[in-house]
Length: 207
Image (cartoon, rainbow, N blue to C red; front, side):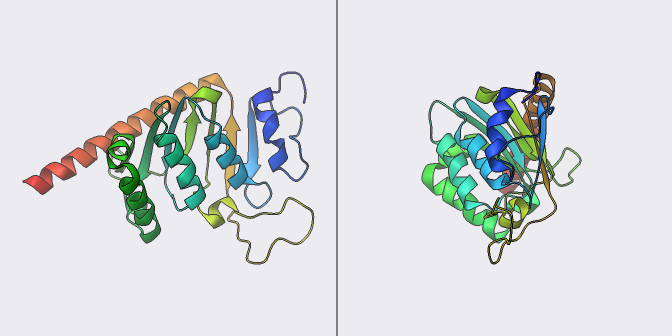
Protein backbone atom coordinates (compact mmCIF):
# COMPACT_ATOMS: atom_id res chain seq x y z
CA UNK A 1 0.00 0.00 0.00
CA UNK A 2 1.39 3.39 -1.03
CA UNK A 3 0.99 6.68 0.76
CA UNK A 4 -2.45 8.02 -0.19
CA UNK A 5 -4.04 4.58 -0.63
CA UNK A 6 -7.16 4.41 1.53
CA UNK A 7 -6.72 1.64 4.15
CA UNK A 8 -10.47 0.93 4.15
CA UNK A 9 -10.05 -0.59 0.69
CA UNK A 10 -6.92 -2.54 1.52
CA UNK A 11 -8.83 -5.29 3.34
CA UNK A 12 -10.56 -6.20 0.05
CA UNK A 13 -7.26 -7.52 -1.27
CA UNK A 14 -8.13 -11.00 0.02
CA UNK A 15 -10.77 -11.21 -2.72
CA UNK A 16 -8.16 -10.96 -5.52
CA UNK A 17 -5.91 -13.74 -6.92
CA UNK A 18 -2.86 -11.83 -5.66
CA UNK A 19 -4.26 -11.56 -2.13
CA UNK A 20 -3.61 -7.82 -2.13
CA UNK A 21 -4.51 -4.66 -4.06
CA UNK A 22 -2.14 -3.12 -6.59
CA UNK A 23 -0.51 -0.11 -4.84
CA UNK A 24 -1.39 3.37 -6.05
CA UNK A 25 -5.16 2.87 -6.16
CA UNK A 26 -5.92 5.93 -4.01
CA UNK A 27 -9.59 6.04 -2.99
CA UNK A 28 -11.03 3.71 -5.69
CA UNK A 29 -10.38 0.14 -6.78
CA UNK A 30 -11.67 -1.69 -9.85
CA UNK A 31 -12.60 -5.36 -9.44
CA UNK A 32 -13.51 -7.65 -12.35
CA UNK A 33 -16.00 -10.51 -12.36
CA UNK A 34 -14.35 -13.76 -13.46
CA UNK A 35 -11.03 -12.60 -12.08
CA UNK A 36 -11.82 -11.36 -8.57
CA UNK A 37 -14.29 -12.68 -6.00
CA UNK A 38 -16.89 -9.97 -6.55
CA UNK A 39 -19.57 -12.02 -4.79
CA UNK A 40 -17.36 -12.17 -1.70
CA UNK A 41 -16.69 -8.43 -1.86
CA UNK A 42 -20.38 -7.55 -1.99
CA UNK A 43 -21.26 -9.88 0.88
CA UNK A 44 -18.38 -8.58 2.98
CA UNK A 45 -19.38 -4.95 2.48
CA UNK A 46 -23.08 -5.53 3.17
CA UNK A 47 -22.50 -7.76 6.20
CA UNK A 48 -20.09 -5.20 7.68
CA UNK A 49 -22.55 -2.28 7.60
CA UNK A 50 -23.71 -1.01 11.00
CA UNK A 51 -25.50 2.26 10.24
CA UNK A 52 -27.24 2.63 6.86
CA UNK A 53 -27.27 0.85 3.49
CA UNK A 54 -28.69 2.67 0.46
CA UNK A 55 -28.81 0.81 -2.85
CA UNK A 56 -30.45 0.49 -6.25
CA UNK A 57 -30.04 -2.86 -7.98
CA UNK A 58 -31.27 -3.63 -11.49
CA UNK A 59 -30.89 -7.42 -11.35
CA UNK A 60 -31.46 -9.03 -7.93
CA UNK A 61 -31.36 -12.83 -8.04
CA UNK A 62 -28.88 -13.73 -5.30
CA UNK A 63 -30.29 -15.65 -2.33
CA UNK A 64 -27.23 -15.08 -0.14
CA UNK A 65 -27.10 -11.33 -0.68
CA UNK A 66 -30.86 -11.22 -0.19
CA UNK A 67 -30.38 -12.75 3.26
CA UNK A 68 -27.58 -10.27 4.01
CA UNK A 69 -29.82 -7.33 3.08
CA UNK A 70 -32.74 -8.81 4.99
CA UNK A 71 -30.57 -9.13 8.11
CA UNK A 72 -29.88 -5.40 7.88
CA UNK A 73 -33.57 -4.61 7.37
CA UNK A 74 -34.51 -6.61 10.46
CA UNK A 75 -31.86 -4.87 12.56
CA UNK A 76 -33.58 -1.93 14.34
CA UNK A 77 -30.31 -0.02 14.51
CA UNK A 78 -29.71 -0.03 10.75
CA UNK A 79 -31.54 1.91 8.03
CA UNK A 80 -31.99 0.26 4.62
CA UNK A 81 -33.21 2.22 1.60
CA UNK A 82 -33.37 0.00 -1.46
CA UNK A 83 -34.75 0.35 -4.97
CA UNK A 84 -35.41 -2.44 -7.47
CA UNK A 85 -36.22 -2.15 -11.16
CA UNK A 86 -39.86 -2.88 -11.91
CA UNK A 87 -39.23 -5.08 -14.95
CA UNK A 88 -36.63 -7.21 -13.18
CA UNK A 89 -38.56 -7.43 -9.91
CA UNK A 90 -41.38 -9.04 -11.89
CA UNK A 91 -39.24 -12.04 -12.84
CA UNK A 92 -39.76 -15.48 -11.31
CA UNK A 93 -36.68 -15.41 -9.10
CA UNK A 94 -37.12 -11.79 -8.05
CA UNK A 95 -40.78 -12.40 -7.15
CA UNK A 96 -39.67 -15.26 -4.93
CA UNK A 97 -37.14 -13.04 -3.14
CA UNK A 98 -39.65 -10.21 -2.66
CA UNK A 99 -42.31 -12.60 -1.36
CA UNK A 100 -39.78 -14.04 1.08
CA UNK A 101 -38.93 -10.59 2.40
CA UNK A 102 -42.57 -9.50 2.68
CA UNK A 103 -43.55 -12.66 4.55
CA UNK A 104 -40.78 -12.21 7.11
CA UNK A 105 -41.49 -8.56 7.87
CA UNK A 106 -44.03 -7.02 5.53
CA UNK A 107 -44.27 -3.59 7.19
CA UNK A 108 -40.52 -3.13 7.48
CA UNK A 109 -40.03 -4.29 3.88
CA UNK A 110 -42.64 -1.87 2.56
CA UNK A 111 -40.97 1.02 4.34
CA UNK A 112 -37.49 0.09 3.11
CA UNK A 113 -37.74 -1.18 -0.48
CA UNK A 114 -39.35 0.50 -3.49
CA UNK A 115 -39.94 -1.00 -6.93
CA UNK A 116 -40.07 1.36 -9.89
CA UNK A 117 -38.56 2.86 -13.01
CA UNK A 118 -36.59 5.94 -13.92
CA UNK A 119 -38.27 9.35 -13.88
CA UNK A 120 -38.88 8.99 -17.64
CA UNK A 121 -40.29 5.47 -17.20
CA UNK A 122 -37.24 3.64 -18.48
CA UNK A 123 -35.55 0.77 -16.65
CA UNK A 124 -33.90 1.62 -13.34
CA UNK A 125 -30.47 0.40 -14.38
CA UNK A 126 -28.36 1.56 -11.43
CA UNK A 127 -26.24 -1.20 -9.88
CA UNK A 128 -24.66 0.06 -6.72
CA UNK A 129 -24.94 1.13 -3.13
CA UNK A 130 -23.62 3.32 -0.32
CA UNK A 131 -22.47 1.91 3.01
CA UNK A 132 -22.83 4.95 5.23
CA UNK A 133 -21.23 3.58 8.39
CA UNK A 134 -18.15 2.40 6.51
CA UNK A 135 -17.80 5.53 4.40
CA UNK A 136 -17.69 3.40 1.26
CA UNK A 137 -19.73 2.82 -1.90
CA UNK A 138 -19.74 0.44 -4.84
CA UNK A 139 -20.99 0.74 -8.42
CA UNK A 140 -20.55 -1.06 -11.71
CA UNK A 141 -22.14 -3.36 -14.28
CA UNK A 142 -22.53 -6.27 -11.85
CA UNK A 143 -26.02 -7.70 -11.40
CA UNK A 144 -26.70 -9.74 -8.27
CA UNK A 145 -26.78 -13.19 -9.85
CA UNK A 146 -24.47 -16.20 -10.10
CA UNK A 147 -23.16 -15.31 -13.54
CA UNK A 148 -23.34 -11.58 -12.87
CA UNK A 149 -21.01 -11.87 -9.87
CA UNK A 150 -19.08 -14.99 -10.83
CA UNK A 151 -20.28 -16.82 -7.72
CA UNK A 152 -18.01 -19.71 -6.68
CA UNK A 153 -14.85 -18.47 -8.35
CA UNK A 154 -11.54 -20.02 -7.36
CA UNK A 155 -8.82 -17.42 -6.83
CA UNK A 156 -6.13 -20.07 -7.22
CA UNK A 157 -4.35 -20.21 -10.57
CA UNK A 158 -5.77 -23.03 -12.66
CA UNK A 159 -9.07 -24.52 -13.73
CA UNK A 160 -12.31 -23.05 -12.36
CA UNK A 161 -14.90 -25.26 -10.62
CA UNK A 162 -17.21 -27.27 -12.87
CA UNK A 163 -20.20 -25.22 -13.96
CA UNK A 164 -18.59 -21.88 -13.07
CA UNK A 165 -20.12 -18.98 -14.98
CA UNK A 166 -19.05 -15.35 -15.09
CA UNK A 167 -20.22 -12.43 -17.19
CA UNK A 168 -17.92 -9.59 -18.23
CA UNK A 169 -18.81 -7.25 -15.38
CA UNK A 170 -16.97 -4.76 -13.20
CA UNK A 171 -17.32 -3.40 -9.68
CA UNK A 172 -15.67 -0.21 -8.44
CA UNK A 173 -15.43 0.26 -4.69
CA UNK A 174 -14.72 3.80 -3.51
CA UNK A 175 -13.99 5.61 -0.30
CA UNK A 176 -13.97 9.03 -1.99
CA UNK A 177 -16.19 11.36 0.03
CA UNK A 178 -17.33 13.46 -2.95
CA UNK A 179 -18.27 10.44 -5.05
CA UNK A 180 -20.12 8.87 -2.13
CA UNK A 181 -22.07 12.04 -1.33
CA UNK A 182 -23.16 12.53 -4.95
CA UNK A 183 -24.11 8.87 -5.35
CA UNK A 184 -26.07 8.81 -2.09
CA UNK A 185 -28.07 11.84 -3.21
CA UNK A 186 -28.85 10.17 -6.55
CA UNK A 187 -29.94 6.95 -4.84
CA UNK A 188 -32.31 8.95 -2.63
CA UNK A 189 -33.80 10.65 -5.71
CA UNK A 190 -34.30 7.32 -7.50
CA UNK A 191 -35.89 5.83 -4.37
CA UNK A 192 -38.27 8.77 -4.02
CA UNK A 193 -39.33 8.42 -7.68
CA UNK A 194 -40.00 4.70 -7.22
CA UNK A 195 -42.05 5.34 -4.08
CA UNK A 196 -44.15 7.92 -5.91
CA UNK A 197 -44.72 5.50 -8.78
CA UNK A 198 -45.83 2.79 -6.35
CA UNK A 199 -48.28 5.22 -4.73
CA UNK A 200 -49.75 6.10 -8.13
CA UNK A 201 -50.19 2.43 -9.05
CA UNK A 202 -51.96 1.69 -5.76
CA UNK A 203 -54.24 4.70 -6.27
CA UNK A 204 -55.22 3.47 -9.73
CA UNK A 205 -56.00 0.04 -8.28
CA UNK A 206 -58.38 1.60 -5.76
CA UNK A 207 -60.08 3.72 -8.41
